[in-house]
Length: 56
Image (tube, rainbow, N blue to C red; front, side, top):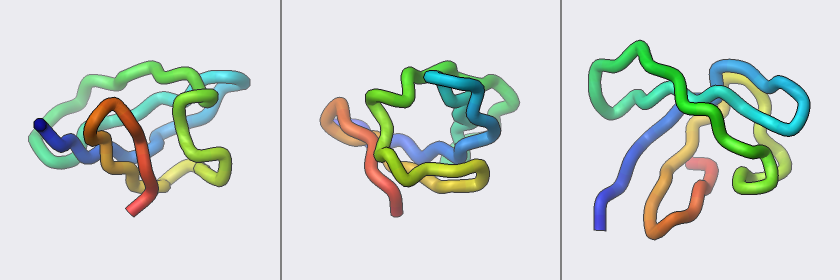
């Protein structure tokens, strides 16, 4: 299973913009906040593995 690392760039209502930080990328990924841990804020680092996001 692949593991990806993201940083929360911004939060806009029910969505958050994530930037991948384990590889060089400027692309943002729009993710529903319902899929993310409730305590996220801008700058939070997340690990995505097995279809789940968790703070690390």
